[in-house]
Image 1 (cartoon, rainbow, N blue to C red):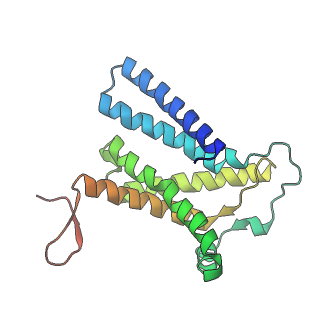
Image 2 (image 1 turned 60 degrees about the horizontal axis):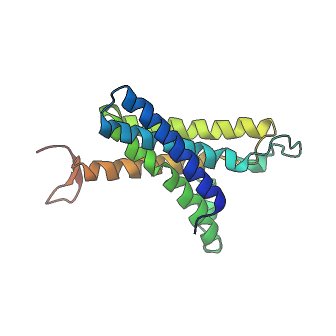
Image 3 (image 1 turned 60 degrees about the vertical axis):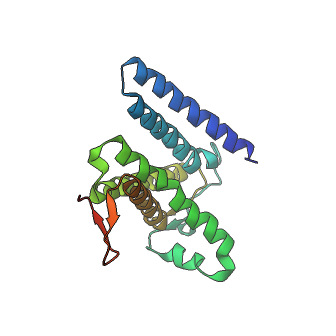
Length: 189
């Protein structure tokens, strides 16, 4: 059973997506594109909720920035959580950061050809992940939020989007394994 806040998230995300779909259909958007756009809007609402509003604490002066809440050393958190005693926390934190951006890797190439290349999608995912971390840092600095800021989140989020991109490419026949080497190729007949 889903927690009440997840039900609320699903309702709000779906509502935003539905409103987007109605507006786009009224302006004669392609039905298949409208569905993808509505899913993207719902995903962005969910991402904003999970990364910002789930930890929103307006007016709490005790939320101060300490260096323990900021990690600028790549792989520090990932290595720390890789120890056997942290397996539960690792699955939740590392797995959650990866899973949270898989939809981005699926939806961006579905929205158009611009994000179907690995480089463009990787850059867009990286930029989105950095934006989330900067927003969390700013809200932490002004005492509105209790999230930590971690460069490893950017790495994991980007990896999640790349996994989503690979899934999208596989479903659409863009990545095809070669028969001899087993190394995936892009495109081709």
